[in-house]
Length: 125
Image (cartoon, rainbow, N blue to C red):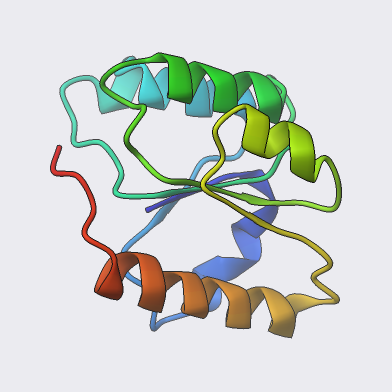
């Protein structure tokens, strides 16, 4: 699971499936493109994406993911406050908004983990 910029707080959640935090859009683009440390590495099972990223806009990242054949099947869940329609038009698989605080974020991520990583059959990479 890849978690983008907003979720640095989640490092303290011990129950999560192993995940990595990528702090900005440019690094996320490089990781997904197989550049740098991720060259030849496994693709994530799921991506939690904040649309407000330093380095490269989240919508641009989402569009790149869904336009790239080897990435397009990876579910992308948007966690942000606005732009629901545009997110779905660009291929988001789920949109979560209005998180009131850290506890809400923890609950949402645990629900996502339970559903997307335990119930749903994901593509193999």
